[in-house]
Amino acid sequence: MSATRPTGWGNCSTPLAPAADDGCESNLTTCYGTPCCTAGQCADPHPDGLGQNYDDCDALGTVGTASTYTQNMAQEAATAYALAGGTIISGTCNSGGGLVMGTSNGSTCATWCYAGNCPGYVYVSNNGTCYCPGTSTGEYTATWK
Image (cartoon, helix red, strand yellow):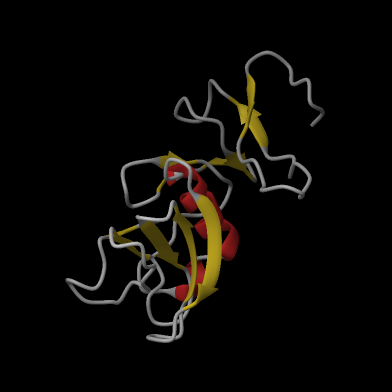
């Protein structure tokens, strides 16, 4: 859709720059009050695991199943969390072979795993170092969808 949407319509997702808008718009009155439809179906907002939600047109991920997560989902979760003054970072987890997307502001780092052995797990550290989330209690802060 164009930048000027008809009244009552909203943007489901906003791809990160420099990507163009993906055209995922929906009628705000028919999708649980939030803008997200794909193929005529409404999608629930995705929880980022740390108290915020983000909307996109992907199905919710299943924790532990890498095929249900994408790098874009991790970027959107990181953007939704957006540590104050934080910057988006990305990298590879050596433990578990997972890829991560995180936000860091120098003293705090949050990482969302979307591949390897830790998809759907998120870890927050407060010591200035980014860590990969694991797959057992104590190795992650929360799970995300």
